[in-house]
Each structure stands twice: as C-alpha cells, then as structure tokens.
Length: 346
Image (tube, rainbow, N blue to C red; front, top):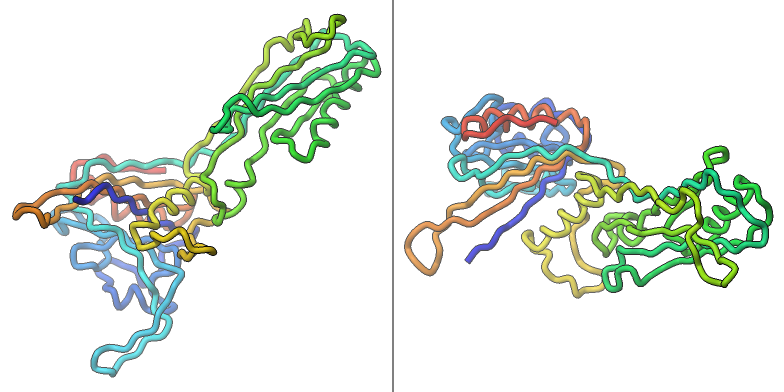
C-alpha cells in the first residue's frame, strides 16, 4: 500500500531561459547551454512538453513540474547518429491530475526571529558589594526541558546602573559556551538577552540536526542579606519576551524538507560513513517562497483489480523575488483555476 509521498523542487534566483516556451519538448529542455538551466522550474503538460501560459485542464488533464538539475549527462541515440554532451538532467514531480488536486496554496517567506528577553531596571539603584545574578533556564533541550541552565554572577562595584549593566553584559558575552548574547543600552536602563542560532542545525546543508531555535526563561536576581536569591524590587520583576519565531521558507526549513524526502528518490541507507547521498539543492544564502500542492495519484493496487488513490504532496520552493516566479505562476494559476482553485501570489 502506498503512503503519503512528499517531493520538493527547489529553484534558483534566475529568470526563464529564452528557449523554454510553450510546446518546447524534452530535446529542447535538456539541450546544453540553451536548455533548462540548473535550478529553473517549468510546468509540463501530459505529453511532457512545456505547458503554455493560460493552458487549462481541458488542454492537459495532468501536469508535471520539473526542475533543471545541476547534474548533466552524455548520451547517443540508438542509431548512433546523434551524440549530446552535457545534457541537462531533469527532476520531475509525480503527475498532478487536475481532478485529484486537493489544495493549492502559496506560503510566503516569513523571516525567523530569535527569542529575546528584556529587563527594564529603570528606577533601581545598584548597591556596591551586592551580588547580582542573571539566570537563564533553557527550554529547548528536549531531553531535559528546563533542567539546563546558565547562571552569571556579578558583584556590584558602584551604584551607577549604566556602569554595572555594562559589566554584567560583558560577563555574559565572555562565556564561550553561552547560548544568548547580551546588550545594555546606556540611558534606557535595559538589559537585553537575544538567543544565538544553534550551530548544529543552522550552519550548512550538511548539518545532522533538524532546524531548531533556542528557547529560554530568564531571571534577574540578587543575593539578599539572608544569603537567599531574591527578585530585584524594580520593574525588572517582569521580563518582556519576544519570539522565538521559526518563520517559513528559511533555508534551514527548506533543507530539512529536502532531506526528509531523500528516501523517496533512493537515498535510504543512512548507515554509511560518510553518508552516500546527493548534494542538496538548497542554498544557504537564499530565502524561499513555497507553492504547496496536495493531490492524489491513481494506481492499480496489486492486491485487487480496481484503481486506488494515494496521497501526495508536491512542494515548489522559489527564492524570494526570483524572476522565474512570474513564469511559474503564469503556467500554474490558469491551470489550477480551471481545476477549481483560486490563483495565488507572493
């Protein structure tokens, strides 16, 4: 029995190649230099020719979405009369049948934003000789949420808030293992903690861990005359938080989607070291908009003699503001409209 299969096609920040026009066939698409470019996305009709702008389900009851791969190949025809060097390899979606499309949505890029915690110390007078404590309780350690902490201690040297705030911030930022950065803005009486990106999942497409963000609670305390930790009697008793916001279409998320669907294209053995797999098409310098198509696929099941349907998801990731977006939507929107779906835009 088939289960839900996901496929993602990832474009580059490029425009449409001049030769890729309605009716162009495979010979044109794979042609070196003049054919489909690496990272170029195009929609094909049921005959696997480029779908014309404005074409509907009546013109082609199914479509394919194709990505130009970075890989090329050489081939010679059966007669041995024609040879082509560096032909473009194409990556194709599963067939998308108009009558079996369930949804057609656009997911506009939303930037990620790290979590912040702000302590407003306005109105508080620091006391020389008092021990101050910034305690950070991390909640994103899935194995022990709330059990992993960093504690920073500072002995006050003056009553001047700007001086002491700068010293506290310097102590936090000096910690090599810190998971936040700290700033103090003179005149605002505010200490701001901002989460740092997690290096194990935000460095490269080869990161092992899936994308995640630092999440934490923070407390600004002092040691009272009894030797106990106590909340400072100032407006800092309330911490103002923002985030974290994971957003949508950030390169780390596109990478994770691409990695998750590798098994559907044959990369199933992850026990090799180094792991034998394709080079990912996600680019760490780009942000992406996404087209998400939920659809079914008809197939003849081996356990009986009638046609079943299996759920599929096809995702098209296109860099924000890429010129080819207009061409892809110019093909997909009219066809999807004829299948009963509203046109989308970024």
